[in-house]
Length: 276
Image (cartoon, rainbow, N blue to C red):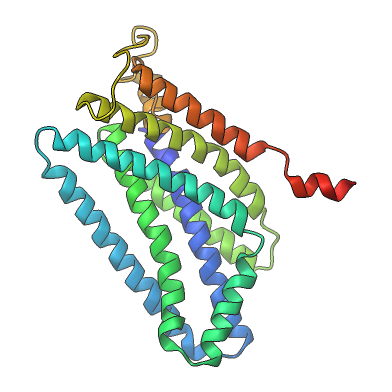
């Protein structure tokens, strides 16, 4: 249960922080330009995005619950792989866009305000929140599948609360919040969680033959660290630990993890050039 709480907290915090930063930038711009009359448009976009995200969650739940036979593992495997892809995209997107996020949003919003384009004023917060909301829903569904139960409300609410508090300190309190450090630390755990989702997705597709196992159980250490109880179940919920994985599951996990660590921590060309 603790693993589910922690993994839910990490990803919900990341997603809520990204959405909160974007909304905070928009609201601060409206106050600065004395365009407070458009604040209701922003919240309309946020509300609409939350409704659509909730609808997506209901659809995913009904899809998995109604599945029969091989359709169950197939759907669960695809959802896990999709969640891994989304988390990977989220990791690199923030690494690339964080530096220019504020200026890009302000330019788009100032353009919409100058043209009095009400649809654009609503759609910018709508698309931003919907992107984060859809990613969160997909991830939470993958976590519930992987852990064999429900997601953690405690983890989700605490992650959302910390994200909102960080943005309030940043935009309203004028405090220096180490956002970059938050993203770097959570990014490390995001990579580990995504690797676990990849391995679990391969495991599910092994069961129905969509991905060959190679060797069904390349090793079995469940007698040492059982993935169904104690620390093993914690690691399973958090990082997708499996005490008796297949060959393709193991290869997929370690290949993904190695590539991601290399891509995340390789020297930046710009940093090297700036020293010369």
